[in-house]
Image: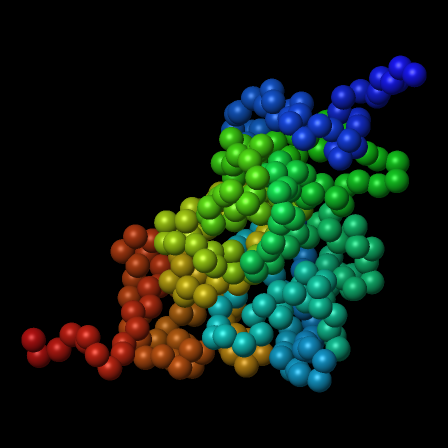
Length: 310
């Protein structure tokens, strides 16, 4: 019996029914220009934690905290290990339910909102994500379109365009057919960011996005995130360990210790030697970064300190 030809238009087939070597239509014919590279300008949403208590089982990490994320800005959370940075981010991402209080998205409890509604506004890049073995870059990035699918809506030209824009924005379009397993650490991190961008959310949460990257790739990733914020207005909240990078890239900084917020505001307004000593227990000098004119923390140990009399 002769096999019936699939008469559905090429771009209306579900993504998993396409041959693995078939490029999405928009990706194959994509025309690069500044407007297409940037993608659509996003809408502003409000995200805040109100009197939240957070923990795991009987172990409480955040005993009570309130904070509002400035819309359209890059917010960076800093603090020592186990101070509650990632725990707070997980609560904001709806991955951890508060034992008291609430995380509010546009004034509504995020725990009470439908999953897809949250995912259409808020994206999360967790720490050290893992990809399914053998998956290609384009297929992984395409998974970011999940919130836009439904019983009556299958993969469309608009999904192809969103994936292509995400790949182009992160400079990984040429890697679309490659297996994620073959990529370097910096390339993989760009692909994960591309997946979050394909989701086309207005808020992006990132848990240590520069982990395991060398200095050059750390700057590449943070420059990319800054471009997306400046060009599209994406609200970003990131946890960073490097205090000097946090000072350079943050519009708004939150310094945490022992599950509490010690200070928040513009880095130039809050980062002092006294604050670093209180939060990190480290002696330091704070000078102006010669490259960015932002605060730069210079640690003072017991050795290798310039003799003032010299």
